[in-house]
Image 1 (spheres, rainbow, N blue to C red):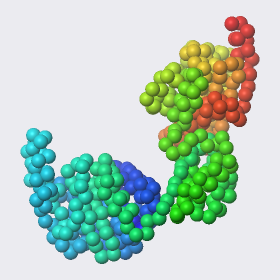
Image 2 (image 1 turned 180 degrees about the vertical axis):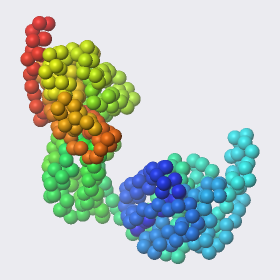
Image 3 (image 1 turned 120 degrees about the vertical axis):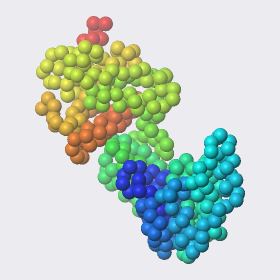
Image 4 (image 1 turned 90 degrees about the vertical axis):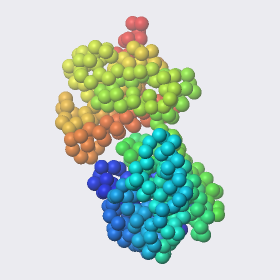
Length: 431
């Protein structure tokens, strides 16, 4: 079973709207063992849509379109499918009644143009839309079947899950598929791929790498009647080869993993941020109930504020500037002690676009102050991918990931550098 995707809309071509529908459909189809061989975006142009549908069915068994089923004159997907099938559009009485009932229930007048959503190609099958007004369509064409779905994401997803995917799964040739996604952080994609060469060579297993800034998702797929057993073996070997590089699976995120680890131990964390400007705090408060393990943070962007709010020694800042591993360590201790957390997590660095304190763009120092006097300090040199705002956005995002993964490793007692700072020892002796 081969499927092509055809998303319709000038707004997609012009970049006004991100084509999230195609990404979602591709993932859902793959989850059901249906091969997506091509994804195309076309304008709101009747003849262009007709040609694209015909070309798709010249290569694939089915084409799924999204968009162009609304009431306005630039919604021409239903017109295009009628032309491709060589039939006319007809007003469906059942759809017309449904539209009128929905409008009446909302105490609104029915605009004549809205009745376009009740027009369908003659002979087309209707795909129920429990989430909206415009139904999906099924049109049998030379070469295969065309499914037309609304462009509104929650309507499209409803029809896909309730109608289209079950129909496609019943067609001959859809294999049994098992899939698992594992998540890693702060490791290069090339390092992971090198370690997993053995898994990639396994019969019946396909490995895909899905990189984001400082994270790589590993998608393992097994196809065939023995897919579940094959996948289990591939996952076990992948975990053996990567070890602590893997922080979770499927929908796990670093913040959720960190919260879970802290909650299991009855511990808490506070954050001191410089170059990330609150992004770590935002990440650690994304999950409902996060206040049980995240106490709060300090955004100490200006150098003098690091001394005023966190107690970073003024002489340290004068001698080394704000971007230094000892400054990160002092920030971590300061925020831990001031907020009374089990762990203090701190970051400082240069996000760009210009160097700072003699440090090049991409220099980042992170620290974790744990329950005792031990600190974990690391200073990754992050890559510089572009210029201006692009540099800042990527470096800041990568710093968040590195910081949360450092915290995860510290909580678990994994391979992190441990340094006892003289200033911390002095502070504890005086107390």
